[in-house]
Image (cartoon, rainbow over all chains, first blue to last red; front, side, top):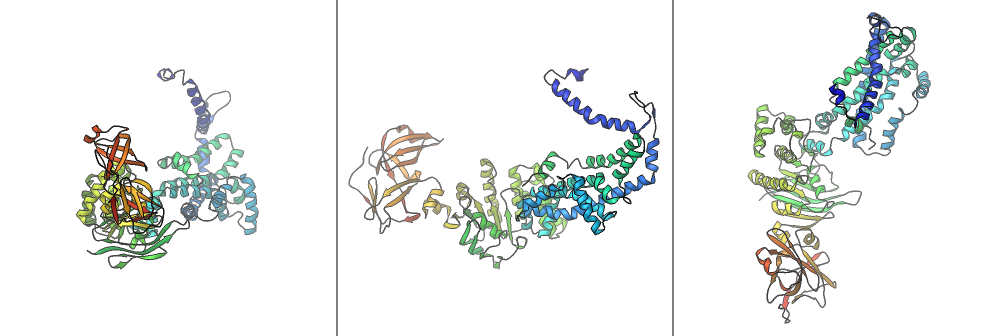
Length: 273
Length: 358
């Protein structure tokens, strides 16, 4: 086979490592997809003995499931919009203004992601009880935003920083007011970074289970929360169908945004400047 | 001629202590004035003040008849070309150029016409649909220049626009800028730290040092008659010799210079390399040749005298008769003296009877 012939002794090691990595990375995914479409699959068969769409039907026809999908998406959209409204001005301030404790503030956004999540959520939950935010939509949105603040501040802040002062000044010079400069020059130039951050925000909100479980129970059950119960209560096939549904938006969004996604945008976003 | 830009008592001191103090100058209509000086001398501060990017602590800036001191950049009749990062990378060249006119809501035909005119002027007609990243550095700076010209500025401000380019391109763009300037009768304030660039394109030059104006003059005067030691050191090549002074008199080789009054015991004599001639027979001064360095059509000859090292330029043809370690006599055509930083004029030059011949 030409493929194996092209592997010389020198890069045999590399080849083996890459293969191993691919197996490690893709096997579970492949397994998941096969499982989702299987009818009957018993040990020691390597493949399912029969195929079926039974569990797809179950999941898609289940009211609870479709409601959770709707809920998850509406929460994710609201969280993303709110995060943009709150964080973009903050990101711009971090990028352009020099104020005391600037780095400390910026670093504090990272802290929410540094603690063990559950501990943080329990602490927040105590607060939420006092303010009557438990089992409310607002409460879930707020707890999701605890996670997304970091993406939405760090990445756009780096994007704003990459817009040179002279590019803004040239626009002022050409007759644009500060707001028009921001609208026509700064914002479009920082757009890729903001889009990347928004996608992360959207996906992380879509994926958030721990906090939602704590704050939203019993009335607000998002996709990941419902998935916990489905995995616990039904055969693994249902779980794999559901996880494919859960992964789908991620894949679609990442494909749509792959133009903006790059190691640069990520690396820039997490620089402490 | 009309005064186009009038800068009065401009002062702006930063927290670091750097800045500009009490700057006064005027630019005439159609004149190219250059601010020249080492980095941190305040030249860019002046330029940015005129452009409106620095709110000055003191002073007035008047363009034409209008006092623009308190106007924001977008309201000023000035246009600026920056050192780099001029263009907006998310817009095509056309959009970059049309930006200001679109803001003013001009008609599409008019915008098209003006953009075409600007592109013809800088000879980049075919770039309208390209993005800045598809252009070379020199092309980008030309687009930036065109964009500034489309603002119809009363004063065009240029902040070291060519310093990021390589030497050959810099030279070409310099010529092109001068051409456009005279064609469009533009009034320009140009900032550079490159003295060659300043000498070659300016009508007048302001040499700056540490926030003060050292000298304001034509390029020729700046070169030939530097008013301060700083200017003499900064502009062109110059030989400097420390000479003692006694009884208001100082001597270099065979020449005795008389001064009306001096306060210090030492003067600095400044001599341009081209004002030193190596000759046979009688001369002003005795020297030995230390080094000969060929630099193409001429050579730099290093001479050792009793008072110090001098460098001079010798034409290729005259070089054959010169050898290292030769004793030669030299003639000094023009010597300028400085006491401290200031130029001091001698009142009389006297030739001493001791004759120097080789």
